Amino acid sequence: MRHTLRPVLAALLAACGTPATPPSATTVPATAPGDTPTTPTAGAATGVGDGLTPPGWDRGVAGYIPPGSTTMPEASICPPDHAGLGCFSQIPGGTFDMGAQSTDPSAPGYDPQAKPDEGPVHKVTVPAYFMMQNEVIAQHYEACVRAKACSADEILRDSPVATFGGTDGDLPVVGVTWKGAQTYCAAIGARLPTEGEWELAARGVDGRQFAFGNTPRCPGASPTRDEDSEVMNTCKPVMEVLKADMPEAESERLFDKVGATLSPDQILGMCRRVVDLPSAEKRKVIEAMLLERPTPTEVPECTATGPRYPSDVRLRNPEGIDGLSGNVAEWTTDPYVAYPGHAPLPPAPDARVVRGGSWLAETVWEWRGAARMPAAATAKLPDIGFRCVWSPP
Image 1 (cartoon, rainbow, N blue to C red):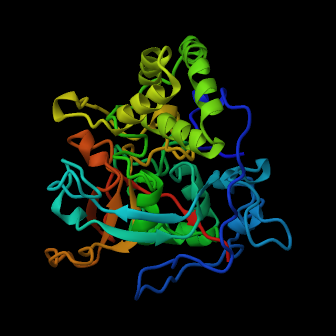
Image 2 (cartoon, rainbow, N blue to C red):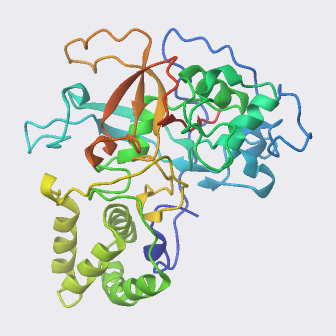
């Protein structure tokens, strides 16, 4: 089943499509040019079965794949006996406009908050792949260390904000170096995402501003059952009319965008606004609302004292991936260099690209999907974590 709709909208759809299977012959490079991983292969870890290691550690990501198959069988994978490694969602491949620019509202990638290193906007094609739904948590990295597949030397420990070795192993692991993150992913048969893969997951082919849409918002409580009921009751007749008057694929794409871009209260307001309009007008008004960009005066001030649990459905991307905007910033495999066509950036020896912003961000604009930040590969910063991706062989 596809995980491309918010729960409120998913409950209104009678059926979900089946996503295309990722190509088996084409893979995204696991490392940047010149990098040679020195990490153990999946299954090489010791300590399996000691009661401390997540189930399935010895099988790595390959444990998800049925015998004789080269692809994961569904769009979202989270088998019970493999829960120790977290869940993966499929990100459909595609060609998209990578980067952002703040000078021409009529050109691709326009974002008034764009920084110079985010341009020029350029086309990038990424094959389908799978990404962890949540950032790697502390107890899983600790298990990797106990299994002697990861090193405790690559992680922040003696700090009030360190999560490694702390009392709450379900929080994202922070303060891990780029090498430590790369080692963990390789130990389970996965890898760090490239910049292109990370940005496609965060922005989609439609170029949304944040992973969760175009409206800045802070972490908060999920909608209550009463709120969900109100949205469903109000929006059901709107969606029924649109589904009847539009090709199925078009209506589903429109519903996908609504769920990814608008919060439940905005969806409710939208449905109230269009419920009595003719079908064609409904669609025009909805599409206009999806294109609206907030002004800086509408940006909320988010405050946090550390990383949070991945529990806010309003901050997930359409594929159900949490924390791409905010929470902890995330390592990518790529070095911090200028995009093609951009003047060379100031020298940043051994710097890697970090994406997504974090709980330490001064403004929510740092959470934008196009924002790039350099960090020394050896840095153990309290707001940097990571997640892994996997491509079929």
